[in-house]
Image (cartoon, rainbow, N blue to C red; front, side):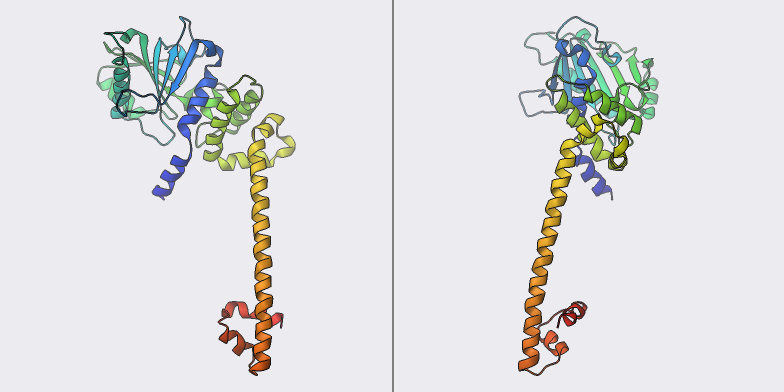
Length: 305
């Protein structure tokens, strides 16, 4: 069972979905931010699932998640079943320190111009307890957003608990869950239907693919209420619906062809049985035994004799 769950988790593209959700979240500052997913932290093969967001202008990001943003911003995303231990926390900080060291000259990336954000769906109770024992303070300036304070010489750091973000907001992040709320799915679909700028559709598709894969029962229930389904949600599912219809038609055609082939084989074998009965003076049972026809299938052959 555990292996199956791991395979399912691997099949769901959580990180690309999160990158899409992040770009949707910061659409209001689209021209002020540059997104660099899966960053290479060295000339050697050290590729990690980090999203690096560069702030191109000295502006305050409108979305409260981005209020901590500096010029360089390291973002780590933990999928729904990922843990967030003290080691995971320091590993992300280590990535941020490696990134700082990539400058071509000393202190090209000042620590004061670097921030770290870790996203996770559930509240990391054990981690916060351990951070407090280390003398750090944890502040919550906004629902679901926690600043790690009182540590010198380290970049400003926040942990974003997507499951606790302000109700009615951040739908793109909230539907990235194995327990997505129906109201969030509907609201995200409606919001997505109003997006028209280039790149938005691919971001929406990435989010929806992961969300649907993780919440199939919910989405099937929503889709079955088609008389009341909003046009936006139907549009989002258009490609998937057409693909499923084509797949079902293909399966039906394959089954029909298989059934026709089986009938043809049965007809030929019935003819052989009759020939054996006439030439060898055998009973139908003896003929079928000689032809090694399975006992469970003999009744249907008898019906056609």
